[in-house]
Length: 321
Length: 274
Image (cartoon, rainbow over all chains, first blue to last red; front, side):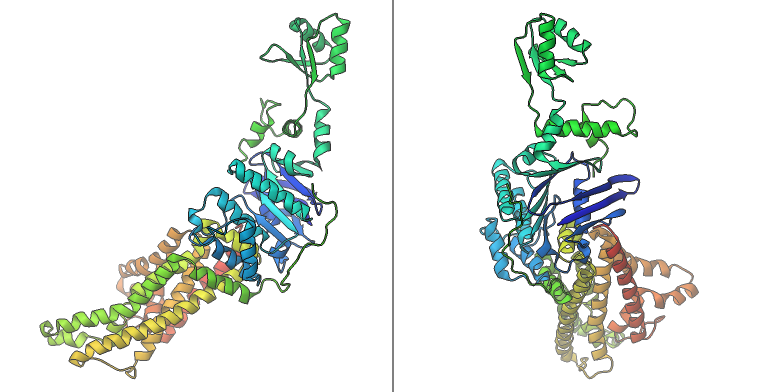
């Protein structure tokens, strides 16, 4: 089990992670979501003892990672950045890691087979494709047969086959009862794999919830698509009762702030014909956008002229690591 | 979807976990599974074992052209060990790279995730690298010495292992190169960049002596014995150098420098983000 309490990391003046608190539930796949530069990798590096927190703590099974006597048996990690010497063969890389824990060669052979690298295991890592590199990273993470697996952007740069492989792997790990902590900036990845979500933006916690309620929460303000031959008149009416309309390219209106019922009733009351009335589905991505938008607006430190409604660009800006 | 409870995982735990002997075993594997390491060690070995006999061969082949004065300056011990500067350079570069190679490739993160207390990684690297260097250099120095003496025998300028300072210089060469390698592992840990680490070594061992030389001679002579290059070279040479401590005194000072650099490296390694 991983517990993060008030975790804070500053690099000089730059705030990478600020007062982050969450607990990973054992036996679940928890998605760690946030735009690029939100502090996901930093948080993972803090959990894994690679960086020192400025304040706060991150513990694995009740102890700081540095205090674990056999860390590879407790947490397996796949970092986003490469962590392999390119001059060594994949097999020898795994062997050297295994030897720090007295893990037998038999287990090295096992994980090599598990990730399907048998044919290239004795070739130098420098010649590996991105997909092979990810497989090697997963093999290293599983070396100690840990109950918790931490993966930073495992699907990054993979081809569709590689992404499918990662997805199946995650399902397999979860089915074995392992705790999986998985970061991504791609919402679609999370929709497919995660049970729970921890969302961060600008190093701060935005949401700690399960996927269904995350979407439901954001759906409360979901827009409605409406098409009418009297588009302008309708927009005027809806504006009068608190709706905000956006003209779509096909002539329809996207209405924010009103439910489908309110839009239909208002149109009927004014005798305006409707050709289409659709409550729009909220995807995880939109839910994420809407939540991080709130987070951005909440902050007073933002410069003037920031446009709400484009939170991804806002968040990613100037917060790269 | 995953299970809500955590069922028994198939575990095969070696519960003792990370120990210094295990990390040392790992570093042993790391050292020998890189092509660049094997080449550097091979180069250092060949330089130490081969250059002395080569020098001897050249001197013997032009024996008839040498004047008496030149014949007298032939020092059969120092000439037989003449490859030690080149061997030292190869070992120094390799020492820097055992650490900077890990930072450069990102391997250091894997190393620290496996051994998160970090210091065992440094101790194990120092232990493995020093032991390998010492053994190889002792063997190479003996080969170089004996090979060169066999060649010097042609004109009877050879000496035996029993000659004064012969064994001291042979083991001295190996000890000095080993200490230099250990210092360079620590330099690599501090600097974390290959180019920077090698530049630091070259600066201290080759540029600094030149800078001291251009100082007023009284000052230069006073500083000379304290230079790492002077302190280390005394033990590796049979012939006493001017402005230097005794061979073992100089080596003790050099070991002091090495320990100081290692202490700085250890503190930084523990403290810095990886």
